[in-house]
Figure 1 (tube, helix red, strand yellow):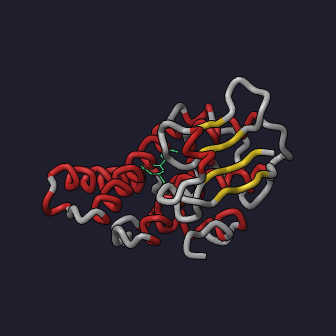
Figure 2 (cartoon, protein in one colour; figure 1 turned 60 degrees about the horizontal axis):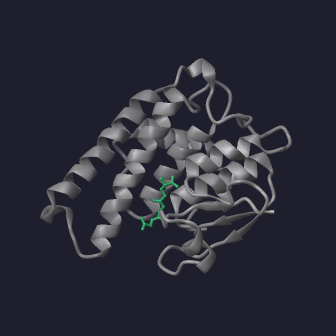
Amino acid sequence: MLKLFGHDASPWVRRVRVLLAELRIPFERNTRDWRDPAPEFVAASPIQRLPVLDLGPGGPVRHLFDSRAIAAMLFTLPHPSPGGDPPFQDALLEPSLGLLDQNVLSVADAAQDSLVNVFLLEGDGIRPEQSPTLQRQNARARACLDWLERTYRGKRTLAPGRLAYVDVAVVTLLGWIRFRKRLDLAPWPELLALEAAHAARPSIASTEPAA
Ligand SMILES: N[C@@H](CCC(=O)N[C@@H](CS)C(=O)NCC(=O)O)C(=O)O
């Protein structure tokens, strides 16, 4: 059986948990974080970032090291046809969007990465006021949220009528920002509406970080 390494507070791990729930793929969990890492995770991944997915023995690759690679692989596994309201998109990308969804994922990743960096460095006592690099990270995150706000204007899913992994990446970004009290989200009402539209969905509600 698949084994997912990663803690509940991680937005990257949450994306994968939502996807596993939507595709109804069974898996085991190890919920230790990178501050108190599981020895198997330490031995497996030179990147030392979570999530990591253990695919089990027998294949050319035992562990996958990155949420996007994990997501792409999960769609290739046998699974029931996804359901939900709206139904979940049964592919990482939707060809008719012409790579817009690829950009949404890149922008959500960049915002998430920058805000996590600021959060971790603040934990080490380094404040954005002391560091132009951190100020750039915050500016990047705001620019990414502005871009997502424009991209989702009037939309509650990027592809009409289906919730996709890329939408989940945006929803989990917002959830993490609120959970870690990083930014006031009021300047991005379209994104708040996107989040609210899917808040009661079981895969989203059951993975809420504070829950
Ligand atoms: N690009 C990676 C990012 C994963 C990531 O940054 N994970 C965080 C957990 S929230 C981590 O493990 N951080 C530990 C570190 O950077 O040392 C992915 O998509 O999986």
